[in-house]
Amino acid sequence: MTGRDDHAEWNSPPAGQPGQYNQPYYPPPPYQQPPPYPPPPYQQYPPQQPYGQPQPQYQQYGQPIVIPIEGKGVGKLAARLNRRTLIISPEGLAHEGKQGAFRIAWPELRRVTITTAYHQDKTKVLSPKIWRVRMVMDAADPGFPQRHPEIGTLQGKYGAPGAGSYGLPLGPVPNLVGPLAQALTTYGRQLFGGVIEEGPVIGFSYL
Image (cartoon, rainbow, N blue to C red; front, side, top):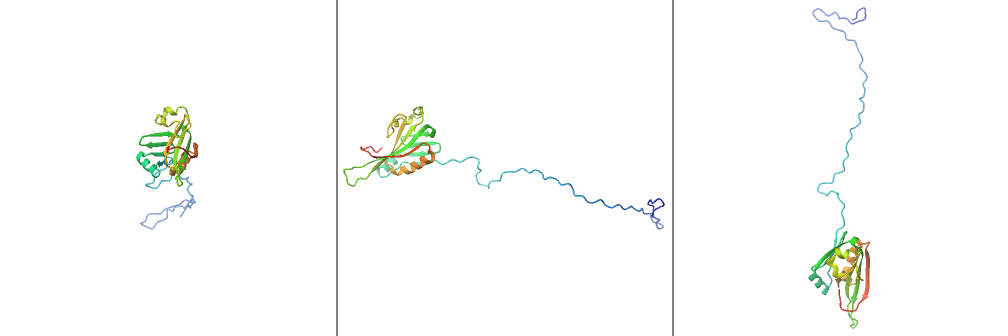
């Protein structure tokens, strides 16, 4: 109920009850969507490796190739007595034996070759070929002899042409020519001069 000036008035309540105030009607405001919020920046992490597997933290290099110097027959017996081994690795080549050892890095060498030759008794009808195998190493600089005095006795010997060249006799081990050539091709390709077949030789030296 309103008065003459259109203002709300108290209704006339029944006797004994408080009067009620007529609330004016206000329509509710339209619903508004909250402003979109950009997603928080998440830090990107590399995927985790499965538990128990090694983490790739460094580059892996090839494994050294170990070649025991062991032939057949007398050569096999001599190898067991001397216990010599060639080790071809990404860093260089090494020789370990009962009478001494040496290690040479690839940059110290200019060339490495394998030479083969054989002895054969022509006076016999059925005479087998007895092979000898050598590895010839040519030094890359004049300071090589001072750095490697342990192989000074090999300079200019066992097929080495002269000063600055070293011949390592391997004995009657033709079965090692293939593995040794493969190892030198794998790790010393830039220096490997191949296998040189010298044919028959005269004499009784099998080194």
